[in-house]
Length: 278
Image: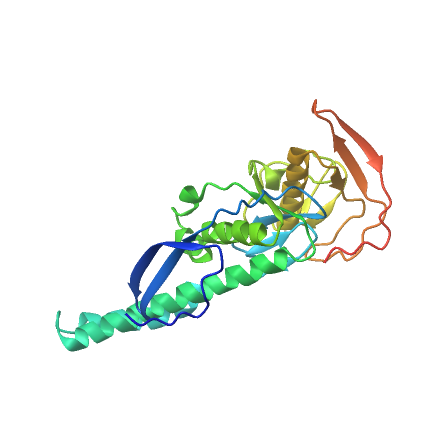
């Protein structure tokens, strides 16, 4: 069978399996290769970031960056509803029925490809200039039920975290998941429990230390602190009060919390003049 072999099989690899599948755009063959080369695990190194996924914003980074959430399914739902209505009026099994089915499958594939491309671009942008990425270990089955199920499935957080994990491994960036409990209820400045927030509350305000920032950014900072504590690195604490949705380009005089093996924490001060966090 003639195929379009767009890149040759690398030297030292042996083809062990061929998986043939059919989708709306055509037939595809996937080659599974095997090699005796051992790849070492990525170790924690360099700068770190924490991320927090959501529906208001697709992604919030601990450095203050916010990524808008594209509506992949919602933007094409009207066209999909129109195609399904046309399919209903066709005679089942006829040529026009199969043509209408094919158009629906192509539209679903278009939504899937657009979402996947966005996930890959976002994952690569997160890995630029960092050595560690931390994310929440979410219960995705629970988020796929309820009144926001369609929006959660449209965002596809599970697919994004899998892609992010693979991209981090490919680019030599350490990736780990942390406990998600209470990340939006903890102040990243003083560690005080601020209580449960409503979904309409988009600003984090600590009544103990007065620290104010975007709610999702504060949760991402807590995720980063938990990840650094888990790998035994110095935990960074912010000093200045950040305004909501404001990107922080430089940080001077960062407070740090060093976590020992026994779990005791001590506060210190470091000088990181001219360091860019973008």
